[in-house]
Image 1: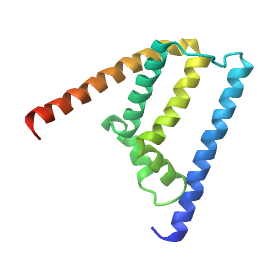
Image 2: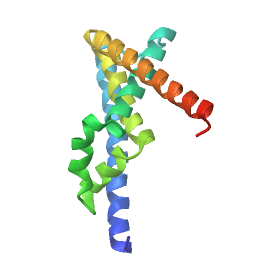
Image 3: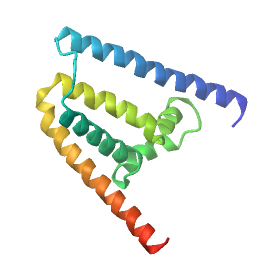
Length: 142
């Protein structure tokens, strides 16, 4: 990657990181305005959010059903679309955005709880499938 393209990508990565930071502050301000800034989260709900975040992140980063989203951003070699491709290629980066979104929905919209619960069940199922696959690989010596 030549230096100009790399500088361009650094700029767009900074823009996406700054957007994340500003959006975080804005969403906290909205929660505060509605009197919903959390003091604590029940342990069950915490693990539910963790599993839901895991599932949606995996959906966006790895699952075949969302290839069309990743493919939309993969044909670019610079700019915001490449930055979005980099974001969707990174489970940690995508996970932060997903956690921000699901956490916000959890605190602001009680009606989102059933959806988050279903996503957490799917996340737990996915986790069990991954663990079972790892056990099979270990048992078969592959």
